[in-house]
Image 1 (cartoon, rainbow, N blue to C red):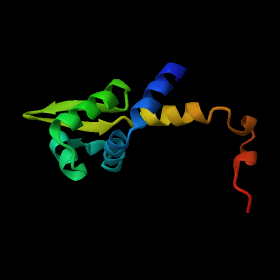
Image 2 (image 1 turned 135 degrees about the vertical axis):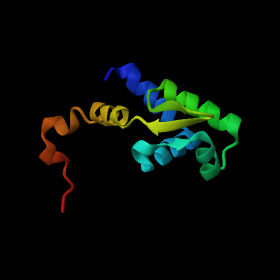
Image 3 (image 1 turned 180 degrees about the horizontal axis):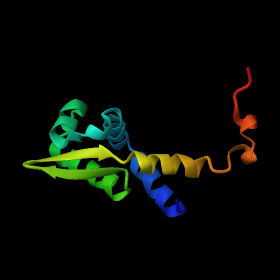
Length: 103
């Protein structure tokens, strides 16, 4: 992952509503949710939700698929795995035993 891609993803997640949307989509797995259900569950009005979903999509963290009159959103789990891998790439200087919690 490129540094600018990581910064974009982190910036997209650095807002309460967007983080809540992303976490809700992760919880629902590959089935994802329609925008209406997301808005209902999080109490977000449609224009606000649309803005947040667009930001997450631009960062590559969610994808959208048209299903008739509805749009279904899914978390891009591979993108978040790539972000975590980028953030922990040199964890503990490559010695993972140093990263384990002390008992």
